[in-house]
Image 1 (tube, rainbow, N blue to C red):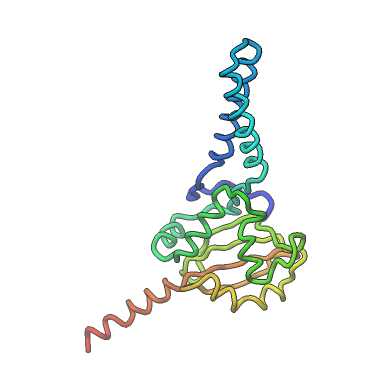
Image 2 (cartoon, rainbow, N blue to C red; image 1 turned 90 degrees about the vertical axis):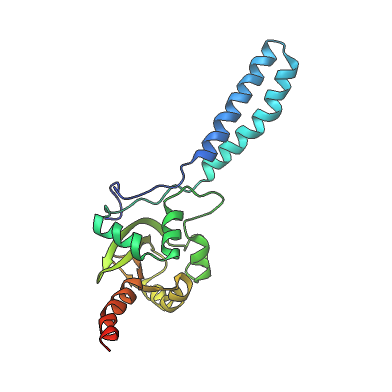
Length: 210
């Protein structure tokens, strides 16, 4: 489940590695023009090509090598779950999903700062790494599941941070932690808006009757 995730039909990937690729190819073109101008004795064009091309090329290379790729889905999202996301997902769930589905720059790992704030990444070597995500329903509630490779942070340590996670990822979030197999952790961020909506619907007729 964690190692060979299939494509997800309901996944929207934000945005691509356009920044790094644009800088790389623009720098490459300008540098090439600079070399061409040098060998054809065009000093002004030569200077401009080298002056702008090489720095832009180096920036592009740095961005391409330092980028975090989008997190893949471990299983396709069904139409029912996608509809629940649109209706019940919290702002934090939406933002986390968006961040993980996009290229990231100048970051060591997806949710790296969040894990540090929660006390789950004491060092870079011990930091759990996100391997995939998936979306499901938990008793009808929209659930964003983040799958971690966590060989150095055990289940007990994760569970000790559960209350803090509710405050960190809230509001309107319930947190569950599962261990599907040794050294792997599933973090379930469950929207409580479905329960609130159901409760309101159940009590509304009584209020009207009264």
